[in-house]
Image (cartoon, rainbow, N blue to C red):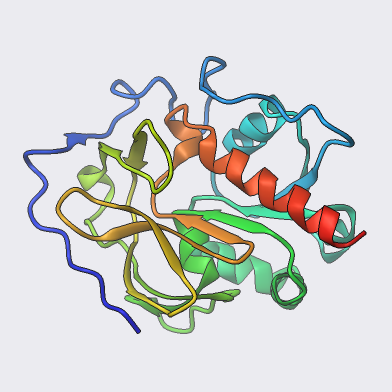
Length: 241
């Protein structure tokens, strides 16, 4: 298990996040001018957004703008109609409780084990993690991602911030909004770090068909992580033929 470096003070390289500093207000709209080409080849990927709590509509809008056939996932039967799943930002402990109440926990775990591509943002990263520091009593995750994450690693809502991040293999930096964000504190051997804060701390990872970010691309006009997720969906579809 590899412990990445911990972040040092951020004053020199971040600005505080708010709706007024972002072109997108949380739980409202998605920028139509974000970079990225729509999916146009073959049948659109059929993807779902877990719609129990969190910023569901923001993910739906981004996925639809990229040409995917996106739908809400609330019941186990909904998983049979999709090829990939997004776990949105929100409150991880609440999503966990609702997933268990609606009988979604084990079906999602089974889908992950079977190789369904999944993308988790913020709370979604926590829900994908195998290990969580700072979890509330009784909190569980879907798991599948061999990482340890720390909940609310940067503080509460008032400590939310934005910064530019370099992502492995991408020319242009990502504009990232961190809202009560987690931090990856340990990486398993099969996990690839994709983005690290300027002063240390892994905030985006990939393992096989699982993708996760500690920040919210869906609220900052950034489409490339969703494009990467849809590419994994298409790859999974091709490998199943």
